[in-house]
Image (cartoon, rainbow, N blue to C red; front, side):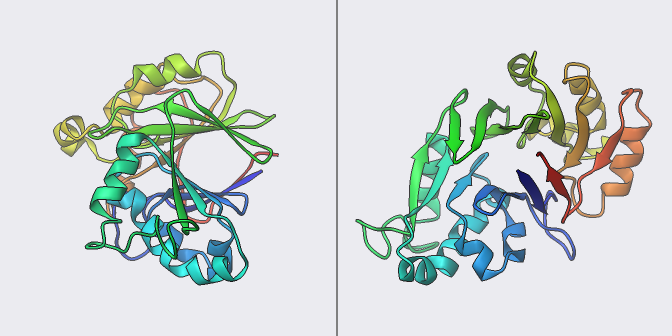
Length: 258
C-alpha cells in the first residue's frame, strides 16, 4: 500500500494545494484542490472518496472530479464512485453543492439508476474494507461534524487526524494501536492561537499538548498550515519541548506502508 500526498495546505496560493491523499490508485482520502494534479486517467480509476468533513477545502475535488470522469467511467461501465462521509457531511454535499445551483447533481447523473457518485454514510468506529485495505473511522473535534482515518498496515497504521482541535477521544481510540505515521494538522501559528481555538484547529502550543497523549513511536507529519506561514509554524513547533522529530508534509511525498 502507498499513500501519495496530493495536497496538504490550509488554503490555496501558487504551489499550495488543499488536502487530498491518494491511497494506491483507487481511494482518495479527502478531495481538496490537490486532486487537480491527477491526470484524467488517474481520476477515472478512483472508486472511493473518504471525506473528513464538509468544508470546501476538503470536498471541492468531489464535484470537479465527477464532471471530469463521468464520460470515461460511463464508457467503460464503471460502477458509481462511493463517497464516504458522516451523514452531516453527505447532507451538506446534497444541499449546498449537488443542488443544481452551485453544481449539477452528480448523485443522479447521468441517471438516477446509474449515477457517477453514490453517497455512503459512515460513523466513528466504523471499519471500511476496500479491497485488501482496512480503514478505520476516527473521532475529530472541529467546527462541523468531522472524522479522521487510520489506514491499517502490517508495519503500523497511517493516521490522519483530519481538521481538529484538541481531541482526547482520538488518543483514547488509538491507545494500544501501533501507529507508524501520524499526520496531524497545525493550521495556525502562535500569533493566531485564539483563532485556532475558536475555529477548532491546532497551533504549535496546542499541538505540543496533544502530542503528550499521541502514540509514542509515531513519526509526526504536520499538515494544513496556511500558505506563507510554514516557516514560522515549523520554527515555533521545533522550539517546543515535544521530544519528537516533527516534519512538514510535502506535496508529492509518498508513504510506503508495505
